[in-house]
Image 1 (cartoon, rainbow, N blue to C red):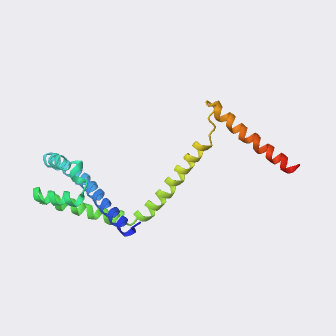
Image 2 (image 1 turned 30 degrees about the horizontal axis):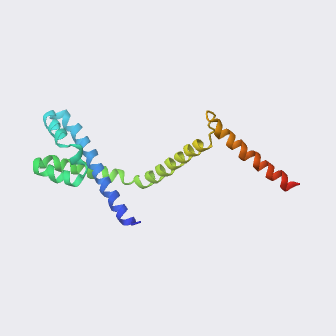
Image 3 (image 1 turned 135 degrees about the vertical axis):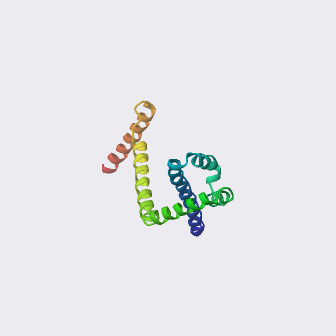
Length: 139
């Protein structure tokens, strides 16, 4: 497991996500003042393009540099605000989600399937043989 590579991949994914959030923010702002430009930005910002935030910004610079600069400014602001809370929130979120998944799994595996009598018979058989073994050991 290459922790540094995982960290790099995670940072790149987070940068792209913050680019996406910045595009949404700028698009909403522009929609209030210039719906035509907002519609253009929406058409330009396809899911495929915005998957890689850095490539998206490069392409946007070629088309509309003023929008690229605005999105970069918003993205930087979001990054500064979010990264303060991110490590604790991610760790806490994963711990809580893992606990919930384990709880649900435990509930599933410990529930008796009352609609399947062969399972009940098998469980009863195992229980009876365990009782017999305990009785014979105590005698």
